Each structure stands twice: as structure tokens, then as C-alpha cells.
View 1 (tube, each protein chain N blue to C red):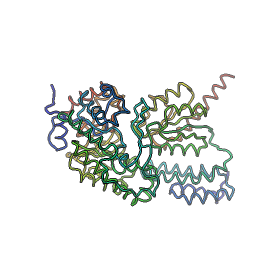
View 2: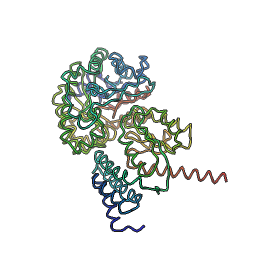
View 3: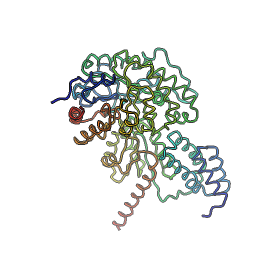
View 4: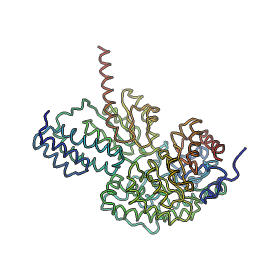
Length: 229
Length: 344
């Protein structure tokens, strides 16, 4: 797919618009993407997402903090809302659906929303249960939607503990479901101990984790299909 | 042989007065009610937030059962927001340990940010209930253990009464507007904290966890939030602690400059580095992990965590956050045993 000079310029504007949380600039560039007939999928991944990747780096090196991250996310969504309706196929090599929410007792949803954004751009179907979600609601929703992935978020130590119960119940009902937990108090140690398949202390590594989990799931299915042959 | 020559109250009070103590105190400025304590009283967690006597007895039980050197009320983070008009959820239906949360905010959009604080803010919501709980606790254990309470810092309180999402973005886009709100909230916090001092609290912790460097840059902390924290600490006459969790090494100096008598940091802080930066005289409380160490850790993990706090230079061995109530009794005992052995 050869990029014309114009396409390169648009990708650059989308990327920088996200990094500089410039919603107007993203809006204009996204509209031009459609006008010139450029592949919107490419604009999302090589423009908006690569901007967000840079934001992730700025966040990691503490040049950006949460307010900047939120403003960048707003700019990304401006572009995504324009481009996504025109995407015919999401070509990330994965398909999946995810149930996501903040556990009961916790009303903090910023981390959850950042993770949700990353699923949105990756083309997942996202069932967002919101915040302060009763434990059983996660289980009901997973069964109802047959989602591959359940993401639980908790911002405080005092609410994180509730996640263990959900993990146990989900795994009992459906051993194949992948569970990802996230939030400031969460650690690798806790994820391992409670039997979660992945964890994200912040939004940065959440998408990578999510994709590798769904890939693993696909591999498992392929293998079991081969065995039954 | 015991190294203790003071009771817990004397020890904690002397610490705040910069006097010599017989050993490093082991207490907290945040919630430390335990399931074991609730069980000994026959109380459900959901019920103790709404009754002064039950609240006081529950808080005192951690001292009574384990010798943890304080009693602290309340247990949730909604008291000030409720007094300002927010509606809360105490999860009365739940058998689980759920802390009350805000159900309905006070400010719903940017246009509603110009609020004023009622004169009688310290008579509203559950503020009088907490005052009463402090007085009851004072009678129950006040001769032997320190009686503590806490209020939220202005930025964290702002995050309770409006969408945190909006607050964070506005603190970047419109810092003046956020500053005016913080100023108003600072007035409310001072009134409420003074009423707790009058009720007999030995020390007050200001919990400003919303301003952690995990969320906000040290620059924004210094420019936007620190001035209001300074105002609070200059108004309070008694012993004070400023607590911020998460990453705090880059703002530890500002925390001290706020005028708080002591600063409190959690396990993400490199306490040895903070001690070096703030010097030998500063009171630094911290910083064991109240869940991964105290609740789920084994004996050796707990003992070494206590020793590490002391070796790193903590003035008091103190948790990074509320102690999660299901802490096993033997773990509390192990911690207190180690402080008695190693704290001198």
C-alpha cells in the first residue's frame, strides 16, 4: 500500500493531533482522509493509534500525566468517531468481544475508560458495564454475550479484593474465558495468585496484553480443533 | 524483656512533639478496623458508618485486640462530600466489605463549579457523628492510645463532588477555575477539621491521594494544590499528617513544605531516599503495603517489612493506605511483636 505524499501528511496530522490533544486538527484531518478516499483503517492505526503510542511513551517518561492522557484520548475519539463508520474490516488479526467494568464499591472509571478506548480502536466489540458494578453482573454479561475476555478494574485496595471472587466464579462457569484485571493497586503477583490471565497496572500495556490473550485463545481453539480431527 | 517504657498515647504524642520516644510507634492515620474487631462486637461493616457508638467501638477494637497504637474514625472517604450535599451509598444490602461511595455528585458540569460552603458545614451530614465517635473513643481508649481522624485534601474532595475526569482536564485547561473551587473546599475542610480537634482528636491526617504523581505532575501539584494544603495546615493547631499515596518521591519536599507536622507515604515511595532528602528531623510515616504485606504476607514477610520501614528511616511504622479489614489476627500480632523487638 503505497502512501502518497498527501496520505503521509494526513497520518502525520492525525498522529500529532492526538499527541498535542488538538481535537480540531484531528477532526479536520479525519474528514480529509474520507474526502481523498484514503483507507480509514490505515488512518486509525498509522495515525491515531501511533499518536497514542507516543502518548504512552510520554506518559511513561512522566512528561505527560493523567490530565494530558485524558485530553489525548478525547482527540483520538474525535477521529475515531469520524473514521470508524467507514471501516469495512478491522485487520488486526484478532476478533473479539470484551466485557469491561469497574467493580462494585469503586466509582473510579478513568483507567477503565482508557483501556476501553484501546479495545475500541482495535475493533473489539465492547460491552461496557460502567462503574460500581455488582460482581454477578460481570458473570451474567459474559455468559449472555459469550465474550472472550472480561476486564475488571479497581482503583483502590479496598475494592480490588472483590475481584478475586469474580475470577473464581467466572473460571468455574467458563474455564476458557480470559480475565484481565487492572488498576493502581493491582500487581503481577496478585494476578497470578488469583488466576487472572493478565493484568495492567495502567492503560499503557493493557492493549498489548489484551491482544496477546485473544491470540492465545485462538491458538487454543485451533489446537483443539486439530486434535478432534 | 520489653523495651516499652511509655504507653501508646504518650509515645505517639511525644513523637508529634519531637520528643524522644522509647521505640518507633506503630499506628496509622487511616482506617484500620478489622473483621476480627467487628466480629468481637457483633457488628456488620455496612452498619458502623452510620452510628457514632458503633463506629467508635469498632475503631477502638484494633487497639484493644492487638495493641495497634491508635483508634481512627471514620472508615470511608465520603463524610465531607456528604456534608456538601452529595448522596452516598453505604451498600446496606451487602454482606461483603464495601466502603461507602458517592452515588450523586454535587457538581455535574463546569457551570456548576461556583459553589459556596454553608456556615454550618461542621453540623451537616455525618460530621457531627464523627465528632461524637471521636469523643466516645476518647473515653474508651483515650488514656492509653492515640485518637486520630482524617479529612480529605481539597483536590481529592473536589474529585468526590464532581467527575474526576472533568476535574483533571480542567486542572490543565482552566487552573484558575479549579483553584477557586479548591479555595472554597479548603474553607470547608478547615471548619470540619477544627471541629474534630475540638472533639478531642489527638492528630488529623489530610488525605490528598488524588494529587499523587501517578496522576498529576509535580508542577501542577506545586502550583495548584500545595498553596491550599498550606492554608489548611497553617489553620490547624494540633498534630497533623499529610498523606499521599502512589508515586511521591518527586513531591516529598513539597509535602513537607505544606506545613504538615508529618508526611505519610506508601510503598511506592523510596523512603530511604525521602529520608535523605528531607533530613533527620522530618517526621516521615510509612510505608508497608497494607494488603500484600499485612493481609496476605507470611510471618517473615511481615517481620522484614517492619524492619525495612525502620531501616529506611520511618519515624513511625505506618501503612500505605487503609488496612484491609480481613487482616488475619496473627498477622497483626506478628507486626506488633516485631515492632516491640526491633523498634527500639
